Amino acid sequence: TAAHEPQPKHPRSRLSFESILHCLIAAFGTLARHHGLISVDLMEYYTTMYQSIWFLCNPLEHKNLSLALICIRQMLIRADVPKERAIAFSKRLLIVSSYLPPHGALAVLHLVNEIRQKHPCVKCLMDEEELPDGGAEGGIIGGQGVYEMFLEDPDHANASSSAGWSSLLHTSSHHPYLSQYSKQCFFEQKIPAVLVRVPAVQILEQYDSSEGGFNPPLSLEGKLTKKEERRREILRKIKFQNLRDEEEQAASSNLTKKETSNGSSKMAPGCRRSSLIFAKLHREETRFAMRSTLVKMQAILRLYKE
Image (cartoon, rainbow, N blue to C red; front, side, top):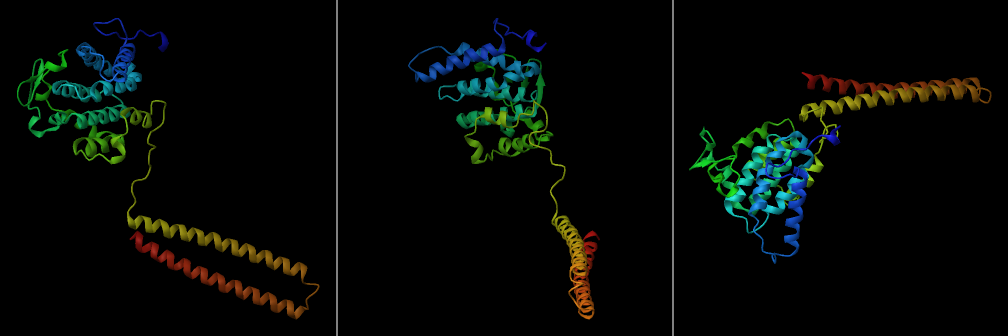
């Protein structure tokens, strides 16, 4: 069963990816609660997390994505993070996002947006001048220098010479919100004020479809044109008019039966005959008016179809 499956371990640790995340969250949570009074060399923590990001490419580890988002946010949304470190983490997150399900990629892009707001130097990944124009063994060439993708130290990976244009693949995603977010919020940087303070974990949970179904729900119809909306409105009116006509006929027939059954003994034959003729004329006049309206609507509908 899945509970007894062996979990992948960190190359330099006996701990699983989930255990590493819990340790890092506890460590940085403790530092945050002491407001910088504890002086600790955090380089080993950052290196461990930087190497562990690759675990997210494994589908078995997608269940730990929420912990990873919390951990990386605690580590990078700080004022003392070096420029190269923030860029290296953002670049590796963009690479890993291509291996995640749509709701996971959406959350990762939102986290990179948060990092970019805290560290404006990350914007160099979206600079057109930094578009990688070639490749080489051991790295990707773009701008000046070589980006060492698999280097363990984020401060020396030279991520500032790379580009994040590989995330353009998300603009063609089948997920409507992922494609829209990657176009407007990520590349055009037009983030709505409602999303600015929303954490990435909340985005992940809001659009999670791992339990089945579609989130957001599928829309079987596209956006209707004004002509189609008008045509459907006329059809609804015609349908309502037909139902109303049937109800009027049923009510009039019931009234006629009631009058003939209850009032025949009390009413003189001549008066009864006059009353029936009047009721019949009234029903015919009402039916003619309804039919005239129906013919007009059908004529308008034919014009819209043409």
